[in-house]
Image 1 (cartoon, helix red, strand yellow):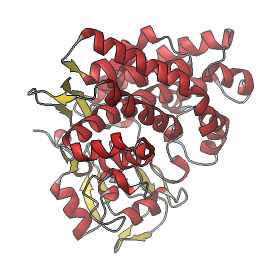
Image 2 (tube, helix red, strand yellow):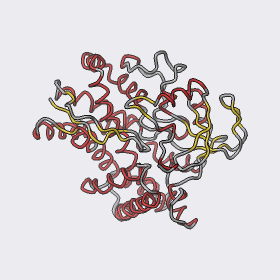
Image 3 (cartoon, one colour):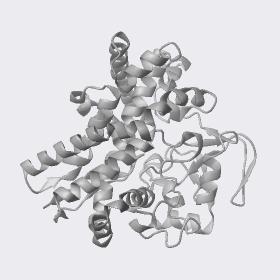
Image 4 (tube, rainbow, N blue to C red):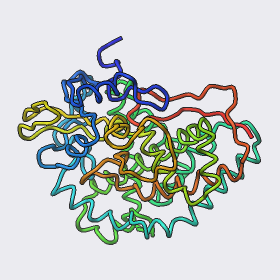
Length: 398
């Protein structure tokens, strides 16, 4: 096994849980030296308070300028090509550039705006439940429910033709798979941009009522075409991969904890707290963006030097005993104690209100339609060596 194929510490899981060695790194050291997936040295920050400190300080901890294109084995790219790849990528820039881009997008992701989408999201969910029911038991929850629903929602929100979903789902999945050679992942990144460029140019010629159309109409003079492409690519990529994996993993968690599922079923008012607990307990995004220290920082008893890479282990932080008692236990009655599943600080997930809306609508609808939903003897398939943790298949019956 090559060094680059060894699972990095912050990505190691045992089904729902951070691996024992990751929990031990948090409980014994807090901040520890590790190798990244690509062999670089980095500091791994694992405790809740320290993770919030790193993510909340965009001055001392900036985004590390490490794109896919700079990974070992990736083809050499010109500065112009790198600038094109990074344009409009909110996860690749810090303030003030990040502030400028985010200010244009934030109005589209307010809770009020998401509530306007709620009837359409309900319709999409009901349509997929109808199709599942018609096809009959058993079913793969990933392909029939968890993946298509967020894909259709984000397609409609952005103005992306839903019939193109197989192409972008394949690209997204391969780009997230850390075992795929860097050269192929860079190629897929360029393919994704070419696809989005064609779409953006069509929308520029005839902007509709979708999010990209709104950006063209209201901010067309402030955003370059490359920035529009970058924004569209990121939202399409993030908008279906994350929520999809929360739906499949969350369903498995509830089926494996029937007493928690029963609490949620008996009291529909608990759905908000149940979703927050699922987000905290599952923490499907391992780390968010890699940071680089801009100055010497004391953190968790360690001295981090300027230029050092810093990775935040979100699953470890969300299971930190200092955050809440019995943090390894899944308990939907906790409410929302302040997890970092969506990150923290200026790069806190822009789409969090949309993800919450989809999850709060989808879980109750699924269990109302199939009150006898159960796992089959076919073992669930977890996706391990991926930047977003999740499942490749989950067979259920009713």
